Image (cartoon, rainbow, N blue to C red; front, side):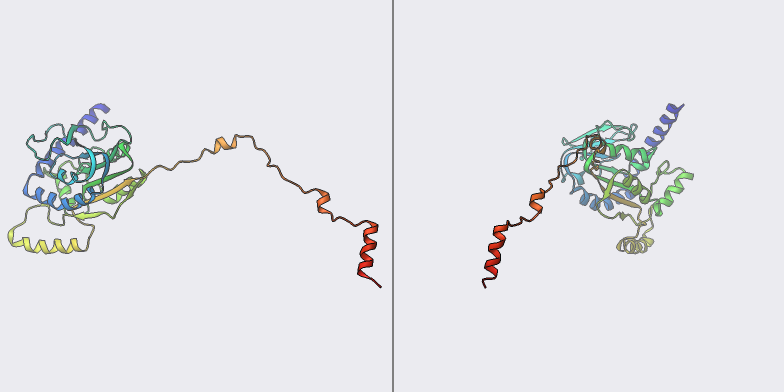
Length: 288
């Protein structure tokens, strides 16, 4: 029974991922990707190490990580029903691709130096298990970049609409940035900077006569950095685990008293003069 439920949840996750991948090819999806490009590129320049893993269903932003100081790059596609196009220019000889479930990735512990989760947590059957799995594979000191939809925005309203009616966002699970930060804190991550928000526009195409008005509102919200953007970006670093001292080994050792030096009694008592010496001292002091 548990196996059947797991297969059903995986099928729902892959189908929602396929719909999201197809939506990113629309004009509105390309506009959203264009707004994310500067922030993703800024965070990717800080990546360094041997291995980088990009988890996502599309490769539109993979060029942003080509300039980072990472030798090997891998693309993890959680989708098993919609293969990546072979003509995609972003997939080159320096990028290896494989498919896997985000809840059980075939990667050893502490083997990745950088991980990018680009709209993957929304499509996961269990986002908490997925983020724990990527944390397991990330080495101490490695960087984690998360790009996800914000439920407390107009795009979150569209996500609520997709629960009732069939939409490209149907089946997605939006995770708030506050909850995600709590998970990262428990897993031992530290933020590199404050959470950044983008995509203050409407989650559907607008008419030309209303485009100017929404452009002003979007510029005003973006200028004040309000936490109501449709997409948030989180950059964090996995901290090195503290080493606890082994107090049991030290307590089991034989305790010995440290040697203490005591002064001899002859050294503490002043030397008294003999009788002849005392008489000579008296004659010197009183010559008369």
